[in-house]
Picture 1 (cartoon, rainbow, N blue to C red):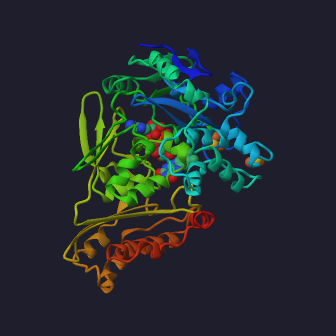
Picture 2 (picture 1 turned 45 degrees about the horizontal axis):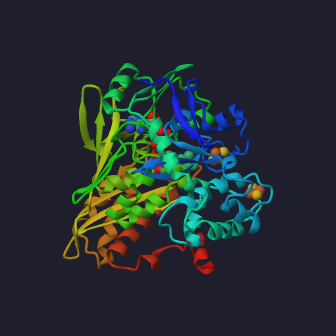
Picture 3 (picture 1 turned 180 degrees about the vertical axis):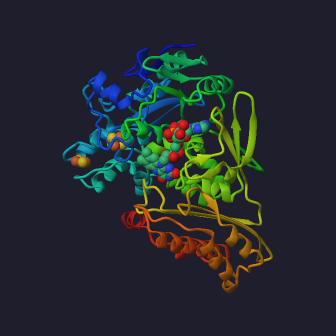
Length: 492
Ligand SMILES: Cc1cc2nc3c(=O)[nH]c(=O)nc-3n(C[C@H](O)[C@H](O)[C@H](O)COP(=O)(O)OP(=O)(O)OC[C@H]3O[C@@H](n4cnc5c(N)ncnc54)[C@H](O)[C@@H]3O)c2cc1C
Ligand code: FES
Ligand code: FES
């Protein structure tokens, strides 16, 4: 058992025993260390002003990812290198991304600038990224600038981020690796201060700790829980962080499908999802921002039970199964059965999610999923539709259709599914009963994101779009052109 957390900052090992359960990385930096280069804007993961980089060893290699320090709990940086804007300039010279921002006029008031710099720092260290405005826009989707405008910032990124990394972090990568290896261990962490921050190292350790403390809050990426702390000022005296549990972050691909451990992040699972279906890869890219995808996990997205979470409808349409465990039991169930009603899931007090298995679509199955939100980037869905059609000789023999945003839980459209059996793909008239049945499948609510009428019309339009694409129509011709990507194409 260890009663401290350990991380690297500026080449030094920092070991802390006085970590409060819900202390954030941002509060640690600004209030304790007086490192005020990192800014606080929204406090909820949306603006990126608080972005810092976390370096971790992945398969023996240093990988730097951007995180929103405002919603990341301090204990969660155990075993990582924490890099803030104060660490970048070396020997009196600006870092290449800082210099490019100066040269290309990427900053005016400067409030957002440290956050942009830190995201660009992680792009600078990323491998295999294609040099394009689209790539840069994807990386910067989680950073807002109110006054400069994005063109000079994107220009700075294109200028600085696509050469082989040659900064001080690259020069001392071996030394950093050795220091990280020295501070990482497989002991459980338990820090008893104003409650506890615990981080078990094994699934069995988690099961025992959770059985003894079923009132504790499980934390995976904290992209939801962090907001309970910063926005609802929730008092969460018992935190169990799942991020150090060996093997719980696995992503295993096989001919049958993909098994994702509960703590696999969106970033870790994106390639495997794209391998199952390009539509799924595109959905993953649309979740939150780079910062959110670096921390947010598949287990958290399912366990939070949100009716507008993006992954459950897609995984339900694909026929996914969920794995749950407690001290005395392990079980699996179809993912759709996990969601009982709004705010209620089939999870016992000491049970936790360990993984989800997603079957690979057969050669005769067509899968599509579409996310509809007010903004292209960094926005929660108003409606999310996912469709898997099994097609034999042009006729639909089976359909699985699931929506988010249409009910209190992610839910299948059972009436439309039944009505589609026997429909012929190249005869749109045969789809009519399914389009009508959809209206009886759901009674969507009106809320701040969308009206009930909008949701229903959109759900019907998405079903029609999925069927048209399945029947061979050119998907690009069916898209409402996205403004950002069209502008990128013009600028390229
Ligand atoms: C700026 C921003 C943008 C976002 N954009 C999107 C988006 O586009 N689409 C979308 O779907 N979501 C979005 N989200 C929501 C959030 O990212 C997801 O819900 C995320 O998947 C939650 O995962 P997490 O690991 O961060 O969960 P946490 O915040 O760590 O936990 C969430 C809940 O799940 C529980 N939990 C976590 N892991 C387990 C487990 N293994 N077993 C049992 N319970 C567990 C926790 O106790 C908590 O109740 C966004 C959030 C932010 C802040
Ligand atoms: S302060 Fe806005 S994302 Fe953290
Ligand atoms: S420079 Fe002012 S907000 Fe970006």
